[in-house]
Image 1 (cartoon, rainbow, N blue to C red):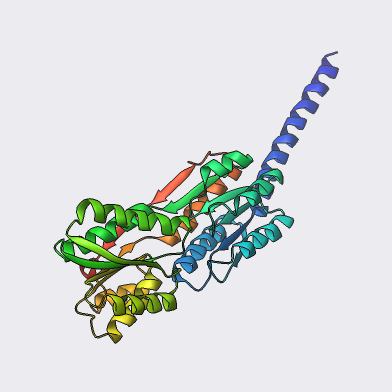
Image 2: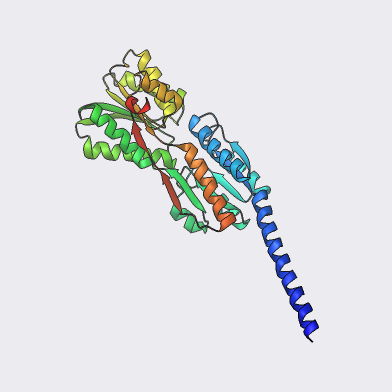
Length: 319
């Protein structure tokens, strides 16, 4: 009897040990095999290049395989959904997306949910009411504080112009959450605090430098005496710089952009721009990967919304 009990105990302990080893091996194997997919709006804008770099370097550090694809224009909404569906065929552990539309991506999110693939929203808000209507869920959202970005840009121009004068706004792509938030922030502060300043023109330039140049030229013809331009990203701001330089008014018009890219910093240091609202897309990509990894590997529930700061920077802050 004692011998039989001894054998049973030994077998039971060996089984527990084996299960523990298997569990450890499965966890290590899972970590080694994690695959993420990321699609960004494009890989020509330095903002999204930095975001992708942040995600890639975080994945490299954590041993995650990452596939990155991009559309080539903010209007390629259907193309972005197709990229996501192509990702889904390979069943990665998570799909990270900078959405071109806050609503068009939602049916895909439901498809990802049904396939057991986590969806992570990166740098753009998604329409919550529509998400709930179709029963889709997002693991987490990591985004810059874009309303604050617009507010910071407005306050910079208000201070620079001593709350007196006329300004124009170069908007991002209409209907895109980041663009709408930056516009809302800018116009809200101008209405509340910039009562001596009038916004005489506000047109989309689709986050594109060439369009920023064209739209700025058109605005300068219609309103040659404006004293400030707020551009919702660095690329449009640099397009405006070129248009203002060609008009011979670089000393008369203060230009503020969003995202302090290397070229925007150089333009500010050279006196061609008043400054930029600094955002850190590298951090956005990094945080999205790290928090998703922490959830999948360690079971740490992420905050639903993580926002990164937007801070106005002038030449003095860049030296």
